[in-house]
Length: 319
Ligand SMILES: [Zn+2]
View 1 (cartoon, rainbow, N blue to C red):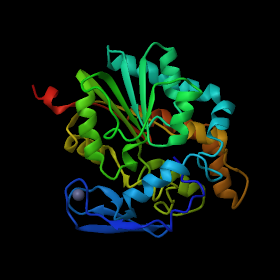
View 2: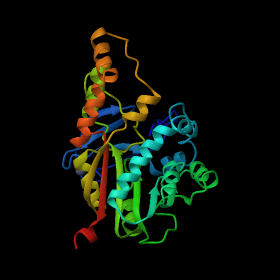
View 3: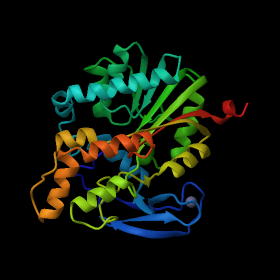
View 4: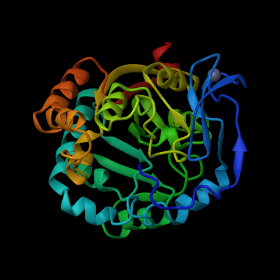
């Protein structure tokens, strides 16, 4: 998710130790827009050592996040309408993936935004429920799309325990101040045999980030993730699995996606600017299909920049 043009800099800050192992020992990797990105010396988690306070972020998501700014969720609905076919292709792949991993039908999406995915899945026969902190987008999901969507956090809203075969947590985990509370709550909401699906970006120290830097004539490692400070953690495959484990889940299947498809269509990169060498590389990468080849290979090797995990509560997998 993009942060748009909201005023993140002025938000009240808090400091944090590593949420995964509790260690306060970390190495500074970079300072992004004034926010320190560090790597834990003990477990390797990359996170914001200073971050906006939870209450400040809640208030902001509650109002501005989905509407303000020129790249944020302003015009989100319009963007969806314009690229509806691309989104529906993505939603349909999600539907097929979910069918492969569950036999049940009762699905909960935590952080469902406007409910477009839920709307699609309902059409495919799922019995869908959503939870969303933004009053604005959750009202859209309810009133315009007619979905069963509750406004609030998944820990705060009233939902029947043990009643969902699938819980989706897509592009949400990296935003959460207390991810383990959310994961534990989800564990209680899942039915016996139920499955959690987590998706989050692998946005730092990923091969695509290095490629992008080279194509822009920059040094690898100098690309700024546009998600600071909305994203509090920058997971890789190993640290994501560790977070799930601490939250009471064991990963049972992995999948690799990529976030490039929509971005490329909505905001195609300029090719013929700057020095001729990097311009030619961009032509090769974006126009002659090198990027697509690399994506295809990366998906096979589980090295795409979308980390997707199917996980089950430990209490079940331990049995
Ligand atoms: Zn740690």
